[in-house]
Length: 73
Image (cartoon, rainbow, N blue to C red; front, side, top):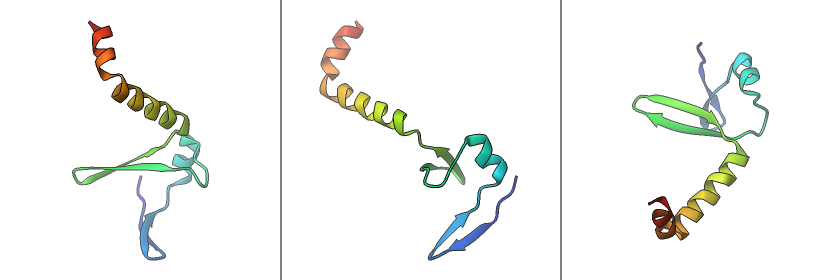
């Protein structure tokens, strides 16, 4: 699948094909994660519920690192 880079204001953007939008259930206002892997870009939808869970995990892991290590033994 191909997409053309277009000028959008002072930025550049890529218009996602409808097929991808439908398959990923994307809608206006959804957030995307952008990662550069070498010369490639990886776009992934951000799941707000997962982001909340991941942040809570990071906090617990940081605050109770020693306790978690002891429990894992």
